[in-house]
Length: 327
Image 1 (cartoon, rainbow, N blue to C red):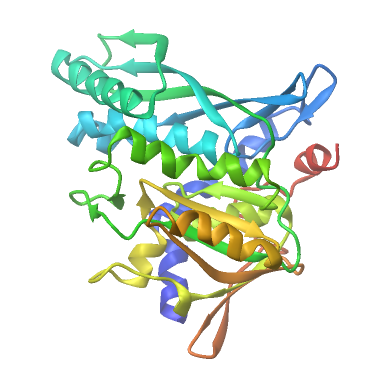
Image 2 (cartoon, rainbow, N blue to C red):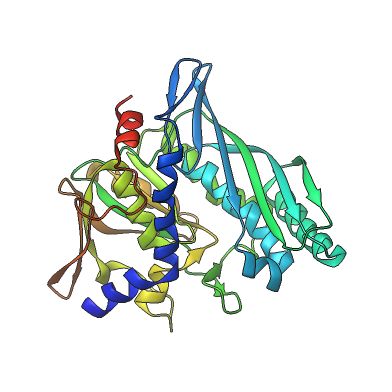
């Protein structure tokens, strides 16, 4: 278990997210729109609007992926944004894309990937920007959504069950840490799976949620806990792993469908049943604690994975973020 922890700490997926901590020095104390504070550090910015919320998010695509498989990069740019909106309990409305490239072939493949996935998920592309004379390729996509009730990363509570949602039906794509469980699904199946999240939000069944990003499930759990100023005990033996995949690899995998939820124990069975009805895994893998320490428990042994009291992950606990959280 000590080797597992050491390897996770040094992995690119975990280390890349620590760069987020550097941006806090360049941000205002908090954003204010129509007199309401907008939380910084969640999957999407949630802007109160007439008793509901506008959700605004953006994602940049990993450049090596853009170069090696531009069509897949286009698809993933849509997928990641849509996951951000649903993770907040919302539903997506529209997409914008920004693409820099000097290759007509690459441009065609990227835009085909974006269009194909936006069509599958029923979210229109309403504009964007293309530069076709750029030395370096780059792709980013932004998304607008709306929610009646919010799921955020800031509201996990001491004593909550920590649930992880994934699909065991899928395969790894090439040499990436991308687990593709969505390509074989039709639009109706995709949307039925995603609609579970806003239903949970609207029924008040979860305290907090976060989509599983490129940092994998363990990095996403870390970000949720840091935003909520909480810790956790994670029972690694309870995590279902696809055949032939190591625990380390799975903890760092970006699934095409994956979410972390913090849920009151009395609501866990209801939440789990909603996902299981659609053939998805929804497992209790731990408990949320108040001490801001994350422990791994395996075969009865307990090891400290991360101490947020002394080692922040994305820097959300600095003084500026405190003002946002406390309003």
